[in-house]
Length: 481
Ligand SMILES: Nc1ncnc2c1ncn2[C@@H]1O[C@H](COP(=O)(O)OP(=O)(O)OP(=O)(O)O)[C@@H](O)[C@H]1O
View 1 (cartoon, rainbow, N blue to C red):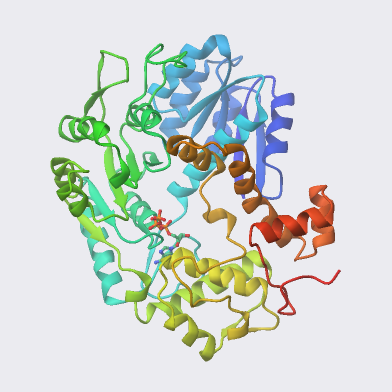
View 2 (tube, rainbow, N blue to C red; view 1 turned 30 degrees about the vertical axis):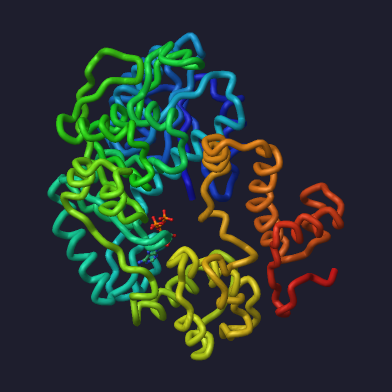
C-alpha cells in the first residue's frame, strides 16, 4: 500500500483532494498539522511521498524538508505552496525536492506529480534482488533467471555497483534494463540517495534539455519561471537515462561535459552549476553502430559505456523460461485473483517455440491474458493467445502498468508532428481505460458500459475498433450477458 504524508497546518481541503486522487485500499493518506508532528511520523514510519506546505506554524517548510532528508534522502518531497512563494519552491528543488504544486491544487497535476513521485519511490525501494533460484516468498520486481548469460549479468552488476562509474545497459526492448539499473543503484554507494529516471525517447528535444538541465525564467517562450532540471535535483544521487540512443545530437555535447566535468548551465542561464550524479543509461539500440553512423557522439558513447552490461533476449535464456513463467503466473494469480498452479507441458512447449520479440514484457502480457481466460488450476495451450505472428503478436489486454503514460504519448506525438492528436490521444486513453474496466467487471460488457456511462453498443464498437478482444473464463471472446 502506498503511503502519502501531508504536512500542512490547514489540510482539510487538500487532504480530501489527495484521498480522492489516491484512494484506499491502494493508498493511505496521513495528515500532520505541524512540522514537528510531520517529522515524528517520518521517523516512525517513513512514507513513500511527502506533500509539504512551505509555511508551517512551528518552522519553515524548507527546514522540515532538510530534516526529512536527514532521516531518509530518498523520500520524494512535493512542496505545496501559494504561487507567490514560487521562489522558495524553486530553492527547494535546487536542494533536491521532487516537485512543487500551487494552491489551490489542480487535481490533474496533483495526480500526475504525486503519481510520478510514488513511482520514483517504488523504483528506489522495491528490491531488485538477484534471484538465481525462484524465491520462496515472491518478490515483485525481483530479477529472476539463472541461465549462463544471466549469471554473467549478475556478476557484472556485483562488480560495477559499488564503483560509482557510469554504466550502460543494453538489450532488446523488454529485457529488463530498468530492473538492472535499479539493482545497480540499490547495491551502489548511493543507495541512500535518490534514484531518478528519464526516458530520452519520450520527451521532445526542446523539453528534454530543460528536463535535464533546467532553464532560467524567460529562456524561451513560455518559460515564466526558473526550472530546476534532473541533474541539479538529483545531485548526490543516481540518474537513469533510458533510451539514451535517442538523445538528440545537439544535447549530447552538454551531456559529455557533465560526464567529464560534472558542470553545466541551465538553458538561458550563465551560472555554471556543479553536480555530482552517477549516470546509468540504457538503450535498445546498438549504440556503437549508431555512433559509427554519426548519429551518436563516439566520445560520449565511450564515456557512458565505460562499463556495459548486455542483457540477453528472452529467446536466448534457455531454461529460464519455465522459471520465469512460474514467477509471473504466481504474481498474476495474486493480482487477478486466479489459482493456476500448473502450466501444462504442451502450453510450455508452445511458449518455448515462440521467439518473443517483445521479451519479458511480452511474456508478462501473454500470461496475464492467459490467466484472465483461465478456468481451473492448470494453464492449457487453448488459454494462450495466438503467438505465431510477427513482432506484435499480442492483441487484447495489454497490462496497463506496462504502458507508457498518456502524457509521454502526447509529448511523443507532438514531437513527431501530427494533425490528429485529439483522436489519437482518446484512442490511447481508451486502450488503457477499457481493458482496465473490462478486467474489473471480469468481462461483463453490460456492467462495464454502465461504469463507463456509455451505451453497450458504443463500448462494443470501441473494443472492436481497438482490437481489444479479451478472452473469458469459458474460453469465448465475448461475454454472454
Ligand atoms: N529477469 C527478470 N525477472 C523478472 N522480471 C523481469 C526480468 N526482467 C524483466 N522483468 C520484468 O519485465 C518487465 C520489463 O522490464 P524492463 O522495463 O526493465 O525492461 P526494459 O528493457 O527496460 O524495457 P524497454 O526497453 O522497453 O524500456 C518489467 O515488468 C520487469 O519487472
